[in-house]
Image (cartoon, rainbow, N blue to C red; front, side, top):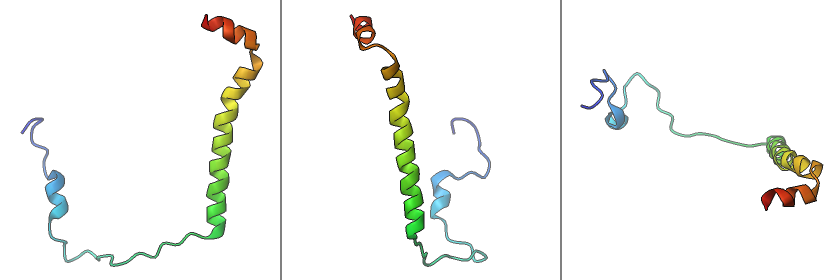
Length: 73
């Protein structure tokens, strides 16, 4: 095996082994999102978008447009 023996690491073959009897199996999950959680995430996403948009815009606004165009030619 390239890289040598990796001990007890079985890679993907360990994922398909039978479940151990001493482990509780989760049959179902109850996942719910409240409206306050949704609005917190929406606010955070909006804040990140505004920061990501305004940061480069400040740099462009500071520089004279004539200077920007003259740098490219």
